[in-house]
Image 1: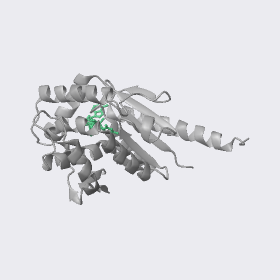
Image 2: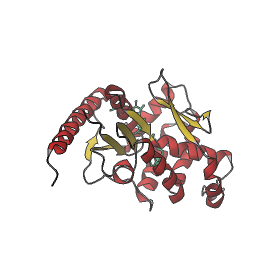
Image 3: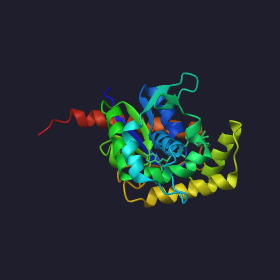
Length: 240
Ligand SMILES: Nc1ncnc2c1ncn2[C@@H]1O[C@H](COP(=O)(O)OP(=O)(O)O)[C@@H](O)[C@H]1O
Ligand SMILES: Nc1ccn([C@@H]2O[C@H](COP(=O)(O)OP(=O)(O)O)[C@@H](O)[C@H]2O)c(=O)n1
C-alpha cells in the first residue's frame, strides 16, 4: 500500500506524541516530534544567554547563531521513541524540563526559527511514510497530508497528565506551575502571527479528555485505515 503523510496537531500535553509514536511503530512509519526541535533551539538559546531579563529573545544574536544549531534524532530502542540531539549531544531529558517549557513558546514564535524548522521537517517527510506531531503540521508543514488529526483535552486534564508523567519519572513537578505553563503556551501558540496553532479545515478533531490511551490508539488506527483506503481510491481515478 502506498505510504501517506500523517499530521497530528493540537494543544500542549494532550497526548499527540503518545498516539503518533504508537501509530508509527505499528505501521512502520517514521515518527517526528517537531516540538522537540523547538525545545532544542530553546535550550541552545538558554545556554548562550539569548534571553533578556523580561523573557524576550535577543533575536539578532540568535539569528546569527542559527547556522550553528544542528538538531538530529536517533531511535532509542528501549523507549521506542526518537532521542533528540543538539549538535550531537543527547538532550532528550533536558529539553523536557520546566525551564525549557517556560521559554519555548517565544522562541517558536520567531519567523526565522520557524522557517528553519519547517524546512527541515519538510525534508524529513518528503518521501511520505511519516507521522509528524506539532502545532502547524496540517496547516503549514504538510497542508496536503492525507490524514490530519487535531487533538484537544481540557487544560486541567492535560496539566494532570503532565504532572503524573514528571512524578512518574521521579522529576520535580508542581501541578499549579504546570497548569499555568500549559495555559500560557496555549495562549502564545494560538495568538502568534506566524503559523498560529489552529485546526486545519480538513482535520479530524479528537477530544481525548475522557478516553484511554488504548482507545485513542484504536481510534487513530481506524482513521489511518480509512485515509489509506481513500487515498487508494483517489489514485485509481483516471486523471483528466
Ligand atoms: N488518553 C490519555 N489518557 C491518559 N493519559 C494520556 C492520554 N494520552 C496521553 N496521555 C499521557 O499524557 C502525557 C502527555 O502526553 P504526550 O503524548 O506527551 O502529549 P503531547 O505530545 O501532546 O505533548 C503523557 O504522560 C501520556 O502518557
Ligand atoms: N510544530 C510545532 C511544534 C511545537 N511548537 C512549539 O514548541 C512548544 C513545545 O512543543 P511540544 O509539542 O514539545 O509541547 P508539549 O505538547 O509536549 O508540551 C509548543 O508549546 C510550541 O510553542 C510549535 O510552535 N510548532
